[in-house]
Length: 455
Ligand code: GDP
Image (tube, rainbow, N blue to C red; front, side, top):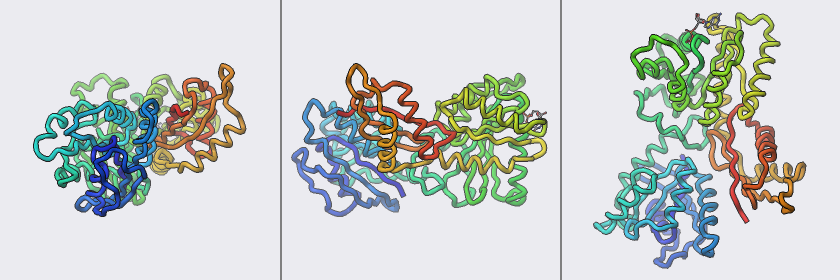
C-alpha cells in the first residue's frame, strides 16, 4: 500500500475530494476558504486500490508576507511523507499565484505528482484545464469531486504508482519513470518490482564476461532457463525471493547504434544505463586500478542518485590482494567523497571466484538506498551534532538549525531548516552529511542534504 498527500490551495475542493475517496463524511466542507485547518487522514479506495490519504491544510490563516514560505514548508513536509502527491487545482477559477508556488515545490520534490483539475463538470472547466498544462506537471486529469467524474483516469494514474512500489516493504517512489514501458517487462514471479542492476565500465574491463558468468551461475541455481527471461536489453530472474533485472549495457549499445566497430567508452550509453538502473556496478580492472574514466562514471552515478558498487575484476591476476584492496579503497575515498564508504566487490569474472558476492552486495546497497529514517531520531541526532560542534556565528549572528526531516529515499534526501540557510559554511554541511552517514549507516550511496529557510 502507499500514501497519497492531497495538495492544493484553499477552496479548490480538497475536502470534497477527500470525502469522495474515503467515502465517509469526515471532513467539514464549506464554501468559505480556510474552514478546514487540521490534517485529516483516511483509508481511501478507488476501485480495487486501497491506500492511505492525507490532507494537510493549515496555511490558510497565514499572513500574506509569510504565505509563500509557509506553503512551501507545509507542502514539503506533506509530500515528504507521501509516495505520491495529488495536486488539485480549480479549473473554473484558473491558475492563481499560490498554485504556481505549490507547483514549483512539487516540481522540485521528485515525488510523483498527479495533477487534478477539479470542478471540471460541464464546460466551465475547459480553459482552466488547458492552463494547467503550463504547470509542467504533466497532463491534468479533468475531475469533478462533487460529481465523481474522472475516477477512471485517476485510477489509471494511481495504478501506475501502486505498481511502482519496490520489492521490500519500504514505501518509496521511483524517480526513474523512464524505466517503465521501455522493454517487455517480464513477470518473474510475485516478488514485487525488480531491483534493476546495470553493469558499466570502460571497454575490456570484463563486463561481458561478468554478465555471462552471472547469468550462467544463476541458471545453475535456478535450474535451466527457469525464471530467467531476456529480451534485447534486459534479463530478469528471481534471486533469493527477489526480482532482479539486469540492464544489459551491451544490448543498449547495440540498439542505440549499428556501427559498433570502434569500442570506446560512450558516456551517453553509460549515462543511459545508469538512468535505467537502481544499482550500478562499476567494473574496473583490478590490475590497472581506478582510472580517470572510472571516476567519471562513478561521479555520474552519484549525480544521478543511484546506488553504486565498485567491482574489482580480474582479481585472479592480483598477487598482493590485501595491498590492492587497500589501494582501491583509498583511491575511492580520496576521489569520491560523495560516495563515502563505497562498497568494493573483488571478483574474477573469468574463474567465477567471488561472483557470488555481487548480488548480495547489490541487494545490500539497494536497501541502504531505500532507507527511511523517522523524523524523531533524525532530530535527536541533529541535537547531538549541534551540541558537539555548534554552527559558527556569521557576521556576529548565530546560525540556527531548527529541524531536519527526510523528504524521500532512493537516494535518501534530507531537508534541514535553518534561519539563514545560505550562510551555513560548506564545511559544516559536510560535517552534518558525514554525521548522517555514520549515525544511520548510510555508507556508500549518494546523499542529498538541502537547506531551507525558516524563521
Ligand atoms: P568488456 O569490454 O568490459 O565487456 O570486457 P570483456 O568481457 O570482453 O573482457 C575483456 C577481456 O578481459 C577478455 O579477454 C576477457 O577474457 C578478459 N577478462 C574478463 N574478466 C576477466 C577476469 O576476471 N580475469 C582475467 N584474467 N581476465 C578477464
